[in-house]
Length: 354
Image (tube, rainbow, N blue to C red; front, side):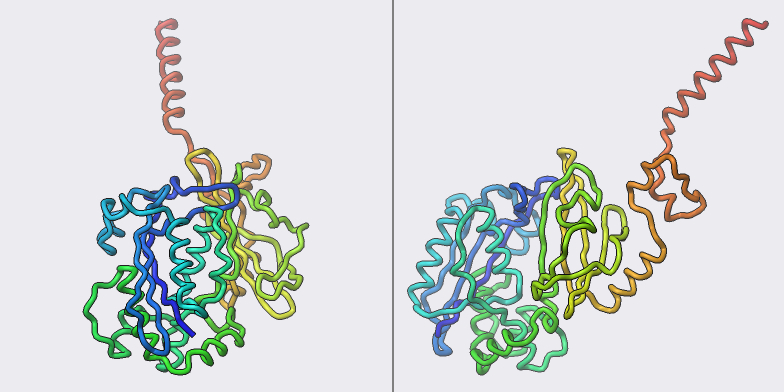
């Protein structure tokens, strides 16, 4: 068995308004570097995979990313598109025969899949992978659920000679840490047997979806109407809402639903785009006691949705600060014009009377 240790670096849009959207698919980041190291029978292969990837949309690198990774536009100028690089990476992986991909953290493979899905590139061959972090924290009795790669390197006593935040360097460090883990196949089997969504905090987000709507209202998001049926994202069994969706904060809503086994928190967030549309993000997350208590307190307060303010037939209590935040701001310039007209009229009347 060969372990393909994978790491990536990616760029982000310079602002939220420039996030690329195609239908219901949202491109959150674009990968700009892929690094991979193969480990067979506890030995690291000298056949590395390291390539830059030319971004299609987020070509302008943020200053923080350039400072962190050291990657510049010149490095990406002659690089190939992700689809071409991924095809070469697939062929490189096939050269090691029976293999499984290992990553440091839970984000790399979902991010890679998300971008490939946006580009309509099939990545079904990436289905077999595991996160090395839980294995590391379990075997070394670390009480924190998440540690940095640098901390893992220091704990395992690996010599630090390379810079961090380079895809190939981080993949190499992760491979060295992997060689310090005992009984990896049985540890992977343990990881897959347990109820991973409950025991691993990295997998708390069970399901995320995106889309665009014209108005920032709860009933404008697909499958969020109380009339729709809900399905648990973990076990796939029918679930029911504990109560109605409630206002959490401006353009953010929350609800809690239950199936026979799991308790799920549903959150919906709206972000205004430049083209007068709203990007909505819906997340199903395993809820805990804090979420349940928060929801109970919110539903008992019966806080208003933003649509409440537009209803002029209902007059809210203006002494309540919660309502006051949603009241439309008075147009001071218009008020000044009215006062000016009033003064002009009064002065003209005085002249006429005089």
